[in-house]
Length: 548
Image (cartoon, rainbow, N blue to C red):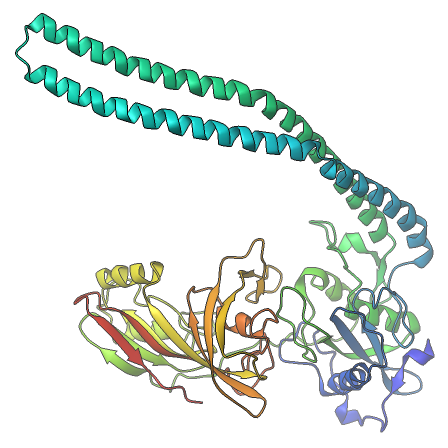
């Protein structure tokens, strides 16, 4: 195991060592010594000294104190190029013999059930039943539409007949007989419609019964596969016994009492590194994790950037492993103190006002009660008599630019309706890290919140909400691109994700601490907005040049 440790040269001075172990959930970046170790790892990755495979991956380093001196360990999350063991990297946490005894047979059973599901799904029986159902439904819809069209003509003719009968010089008995005959024709049409509907339902019932039987069979096979897969994961998880700094051992599943451990729990870089250090009697000093390679399909990862440990997999795990160490509290991002910075009013009348929000000021109060300053709180102090919610839309904390507020609830409702109907037009200006190919276009990438890493948004083509952005290049130079962005929808972080995602512009906005690289500020500015004034109905537009 000694070959796993890379000693620092020159040796770090006592002042360069952390006094306490920095929290792996720290949002403000790793300790300088861990960063130095991570940069050495990144240099090897950049030079191609490690077979990365085709996918991007999270890597980690752990600074440790050994008998020989201070050095660092390297790890990767999960498997690397299909391998658990790669020279120079720490081994996995699980018991190899125990896992080998359960995994091969378990995977064989799961694979066999998966093959049965595929064979049944592809056999054609279910597809033929569904096709027959769809064809019959289309035939019935066509017949029903034709009948309703004929009966609509009959109804119009009967209406005219009734008018003629009522206007004719007939005896009461003759008029009653004529109207009765017309009513009988109407009843015959209704009976014909009921008969056709019933015959259609009867014809579909047989096919529907066959289809339901086949679908129940498929669902039963899928449930069986799911049960086998979950059973396999339980037995695999039982091959993990996790140690902490005090020498305590704990079965992995015990650390996730409310649900089964998520896939890949204890296979992340952080747990691997700590487990190796504890097993060898080395003292952990600092940890860093960084992404390397192409971003995942969901986006939100940039090569070479540092990321805190994930809450989904490591949230329950790492606190146990760190027991026995003196661990710092995680530092959280906090916005700058802008209480002395005034709000610049671009326009104001009796109904609304338009302000130029500075970067770093919240639109509305955040969940953290210690950060009370926001545009909304300031407006409430400035306009104590205003009714309604005031702000009709929001800008991200890191985004500067035009923000519209309403002084009364009627104006708010009218302007909110324009936002909902998407008649409000907005243009943003941004500077991107990288040179974008093409001159203009449209990005359509559905988005949803990352449930395990809020407020980060990810691309999800299945469960994401539609998000559409038009863009145009304004200027290129110095490895950067200035663009104009027109959001057609208003999803959270839409422009930031659409800029950074490889299926979008593939170039994060400069200074984006969530989807790119942290900088002095996010170079994104809401520069122009246009809408119909709620009081006059006239189209109004407002502009604020970006401060960058």
